[in-house]
Image (cartoon, rainbow, N blue to C red; front, side):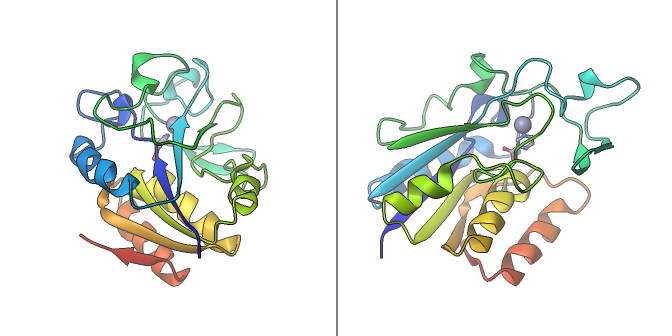
Length: 200
Ligand code: VGL
Ligand code: ZN
């Protein structure tokens, strides 16, 4: 069995003082740093949006952050502007050890479509290429950590399970946005999909 650690979106905008700060986001950095040496394959993701990304409330008339809208691929939460390509907010948290990353994968760079999952964009069909990378490296089990539990972490975990990987999520190394019960729904969905939830 070859295991990969997938570190999801531990970026300044999701941490204290960031544009879309996840409560307690900073607290997971030390634990992730410690975990890195335990995995032979290590992948980091970055949310990486153009400044006019369609998931930003600022791009829609009469919409506020955290409201829902309808996109061609289904309902989409509108967010404050965050993780704009090349900005300080899109950079990794300064305390995160990034040198051990084998691969850094960026997502959400197409204006018209959001991408929570590290595997597919929000249409659930357009691939990021991560599946092929992991398979070529002989990986069969993934442990996911990072931000946010109820969006990018759970979407990635569910896609990974659907693709046939064995999947675990270490909740001690994740934090949630928790919008209208989204955390409880995400946890339930992950349990139903056979994902191993540890910690918390
Ligand atoms: C995320 C909302 C918008 C995440 C990314 O990383 O969970 N959430 N973009
Ligand atoms: Zn985003």
